[in-house]
Image (cartoon, rainbow, N blue to C red; front, top):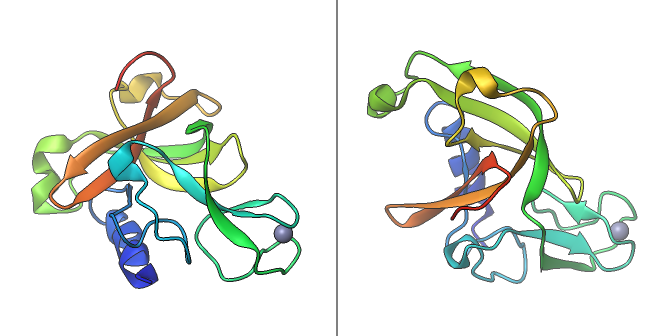
Length: 153
Ligand SMILES: [Zn+2]
């Protein structure tokens, strides 16, 4: 299990480029360790006792307390719950990327993810905007970001 790496990437993303990195081993699942983002599929833990989806990964369901958690594909669709536009780089490596959009996306399945919105003009972003997952390989990680719903990658 490499929960610490996932957490580090997510928290590190707050000062750099936010996204959820799902590598081939740690993934979103505490137990399954299935490849996910590398396959361009978003997966979250789901409780098989009550059906609740969980993010971030946990050992026990937050709704019913069981440990019947498995990694399951989700739609990758959601809406912008909240956002901000970074107009100054928070890291020298991001100087060429400003302005960029840091957002919390509420997935159709319920969980909220802190991420980036890409391929969207910052002036066009509004709360409630429908978005879908978009995957980008960066070094040895695959970032899960979100873009407007529609055809694409
Ligand atoms: Zn449950």
